[in-house]
Length: 130
Image 1: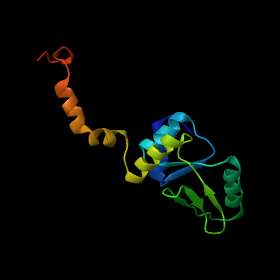
Image 2 (image 1 turned 60 degrees about the vertical axis):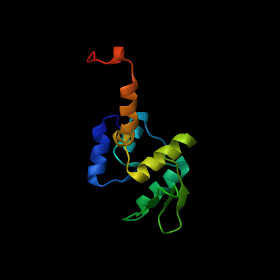
Image 3 (image 1 turned 120 degrees about the horizontal axis):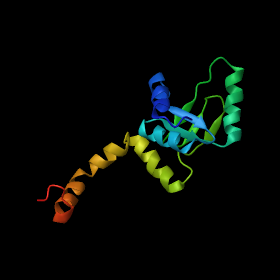
Image 4 (image 1 turned 45 degrees about the vertical axis):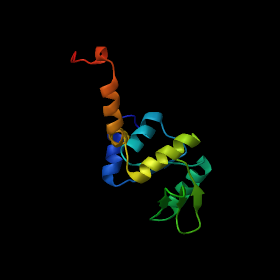
């Protein structure tokens, strides 16, 4: 995938809600999370199985179940996936996708804590000099 955020924007605007691959470039991967596109990471052999099925018929309709972390086609294909290769990060990123959060909304959820911290900081760190 491209490292330009516009690449994910274009896919999202075209209607893609998930990208299925065996791996993704780091920046493209991060941009997927920031734009609500589910990065579905599966073993290469499962991705190739889907590619063969897509070539065989006129339509391949898939269900991506983010809660169960499973892709299925209703005709017997079923595969588990992760949204991140690190288990701890996978859990966090999966939850943020399910809840519709991005980095900005996560920061805003902590606005009270940030405000309290700002009030406690030393005067020499205050750019206003107050």
